[in-house]
Length: 136
Image (cartoon, rainbow, N blue to C red; front, side):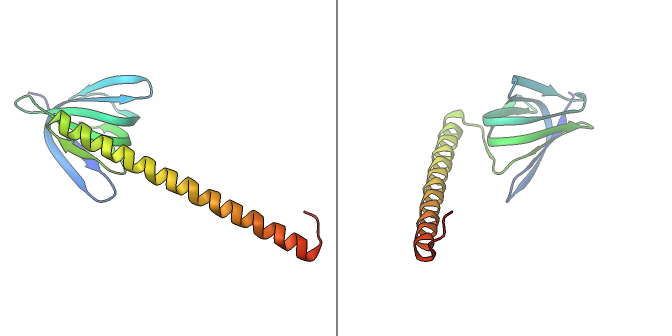
């Protein structure tokens, strides 16, 4: 059976998975699949689930918050901020949902912090303007 190697990299870990028979993912143009000896290929994966099959028809799900995918010389390399692998679709879907909610909460907190900084800066400029009598 024709296989390829899957290399996964994120900010804290890396994993090399040999004997992958196929990979299914999604980019901005839609879903696609890769098999061994595919032509050189590069794309960016969207936030969500991909999956890959290893020998003996064992499917594994791969949760990603977006990633860069590169296939060359029978090796598939995926670089992302964070990834999760699990054979159970329900379990990895729940983990992905939790990750999405956590990222959304962090993003909201960052937005609120930036708003407070902007308001404080504008207040400071207003007070400086009043003290010096300069017009901005």
